[in-house]
Image (cartoon, each protein chain N blue to C red):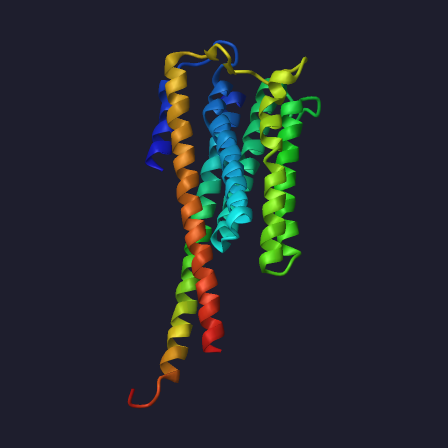
Amino acid sequence: MLLLGGGVALALLWAPEDADQGISQRIFYIHVPVALTAYACFGWGAWKALRHLWTRGERYDLESYTAIHMGTIFGLLTLVTGSIWAKISWGVWWSWGERQLVLFLILFLFYSAYFMLRFSVDAGPARANLSAVYALFGVVLIPVSFLAIRLAENFIHPVVFTREGPQMAGSMFATFLVCLAGTLALAGALYSNELTGKRLDERLLELRELLA
Amino acid sequence: MSAGEKYLAAAYAVVLGAVLAYVAIIALKLARMERELDELAQLARGRRPAGG
């Protein structure tokens, strides 16, 4: 929280104002780190799903589920902050012509459906295996979503990171890195808390069944 | 406050609000677990054999 708080303070008070977009560009420091964190959570969830399928370890199923849970929260925040930024910059809340936005929405909806699938099957190895396979399919959408903007011919979504490096001032990039580190640390802390909570829930249920 | 500033504040407030909501949910969950643990402890104490 300290790292993220510091990042937000840098973004709002220290980073220089963008010459083109003005004050609205400062949304970049929260929107992009949140989006990258969502990708990281989905990727982590897929990695844990792969470990589950590989080893059949029960703990990996819960870890994959928790990571996807976190990714969905950060995905929703990406859509909301992006929508606010779009409203200031483009004058609309959403643009269906933007592949990057639509692909991110598809990714978000895909992982939202993960929960419907997971809770439509009784707990057990079948649910864990189905969830793991689904989580692995979703991860394919991450590079597609990430690269969509670079593949698009006509776009209005800004491209900041190119092959030549970040297209921004050093102070802006430093602020972005602090915000990214803060967001990733926050996601890590929330993931750890959520996982501990879910494990405790399972043990409580086990204890209740033993005492019943 | 300009329109841009309002939207900027809204974007940061959404993220902060989500974090606070999440912390509140975790606090509620912890309180529920504590209650459940108390119930189970009581249940276990009730089952302890007399004199044990």
